Amino acid sequence: MSHRQLPDAEPRSKVLSILWFLASVLMLFALENIWIDPWLRSKSRHIPTLVPEPQSGLWFLALLVVAISCVLLVVAQILVTLDRGISIPRRMRTGFATFFALLSCVLWFRATSGMSSTAWLQKEGKGHFVTLTWVASNSPVVGYNVYRSTKPGGSFKRINSDLIRGLTYMDQDVESGMTYYYGIRAVDAKGQESNNSNETVARIP
Image (cartoon, rainbow, N blue to C red; front, side, top):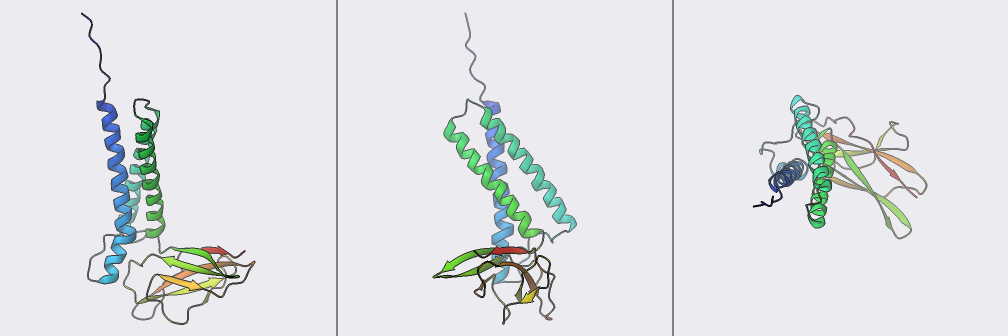
């Protein structure tokens, strides 16, 4: 009497479970650090932050854990992609989950390694303007100043007249053909400024 061997679905199920678990944890971790925590602290400074201080020992430990998790996630995704026993729609879904989890980790690194900003070039009529956004500082601050230069690492000049209370600023004084470099500085209650955030570039066509 012959016995038919059924396909072993247990290893496949474990790989899928590991992939979805890692992708979910990484995205939730990044979401909390990048958006939820700054939003909560903008409502009340008494809420303790869960975001590690930039370049601190805890931050490097979190970076190590995130890096290892990303490697495991990529390995799991490769195994899923190579497994022809998994349907194409399921492989596509896990691929999207892996991509967004890795993207979230990159954003987490940029946001927590030091105050970072993003420049968006927009057009209004025949002119252009640059909209800057940044994440909240981990330290208690009363506002932010925006500095601009036409050279990387060059002499930056403050371009906002009043202290910015929010996390965005629109620079409408830009010229076509120019390249601008921006830096954001946090200001504490004593009026002391932090160092520039990571430089952000905007090229005006």
